[in-house]
Image (cartoon, rainbow, N blue to C red; front, top):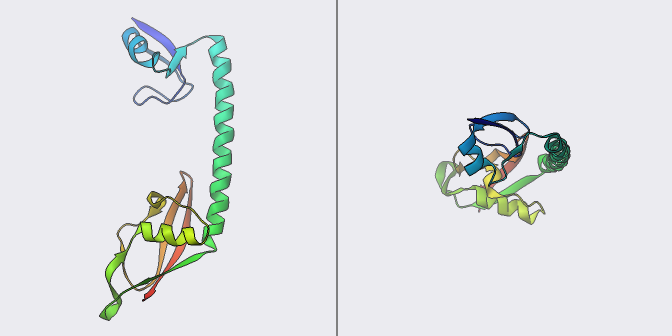
Length: 149
């Protein structure tokens, strides 16, 4: 027997927020409903869901605007990191995301180190462009100057 529900949250392999889905009775009763991931498909539920969608959309737009402003601010900055280097401008160690995040923090920009995208640590002196993912839709490019200590 199947039950028709409206998803209140995104559920992997079932559907996204607001989708009307038909699922097995046991799956609905034992998983979706107790975890408040879905609700019965009634007019009242539809109205609540529409209000929630509007609220989520507004929050998403606010986060996007903040991320875009931060990206513009970061694009105007550059970070200088000093490191010990040998001949051929090769670093003895490497410059990593936590070091870049710390350098940004000294300039008043708090970024999670996980947001800094380095394919591999920086191991040479010079100017490097580092990508910072601020939002699903927004990335910023930061110039990192690695100089001899």
